[in-house]
Image 1 (cartoon, rainbow, N blue to C red):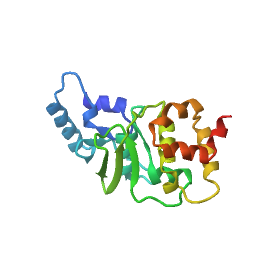
Image 2 (image 1 turned 90 degrees about the vertical axis):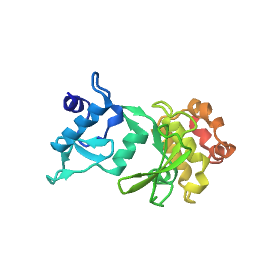
Image 3 (image 1 turned 135 degrees about the horizontal axis):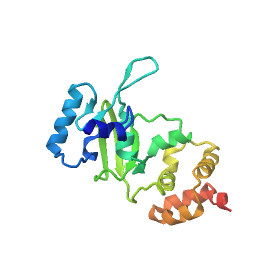
Image 4 (image 1 turned 60 degrees about the vertical axis):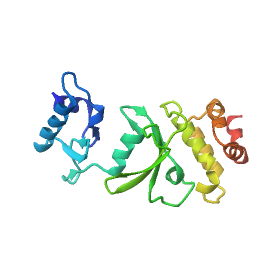
Length: 206
């Protein structure tokens, strides 16, 4: 029953968090026993305690293992089509091309952590995960990520003339509206508001 449920609800190479699964008539102890049986038989692979996956083959016909980045994404950013976080800090600045500094540690803001900030070790990687002071949802994650970047823009962005241009492009690509900005910007420090106007980003909505 468990394996059929997994095949129906998960894809190969997708992290399976044992804490996400509840099956009628199956206790937590029995559930863990069933995961062990499936792992021992080779039908599931164990990544770490409480994290499993169905193995898949690569184009080179070798078995692919689960990556730390994939586990972190599903655990703290999005799974089951529910967005709970976003990349932040130098990680996001680098993704936008605002900073050429390649971060050694990936930074994430997420609902799925109680502490204000924690260094999370997954596999051989360390992730800095911060608790979001505003609940992240499917509807607001892009604007919260943008405002979070604006809050520390001078720290993250290299000193070049394309910063405003890249921010404008991101606003348009993500369909961020003036109403989105107005709804959340006053929940951020004053410097966020100043950076928004110093970058002349308000003209995007004119």
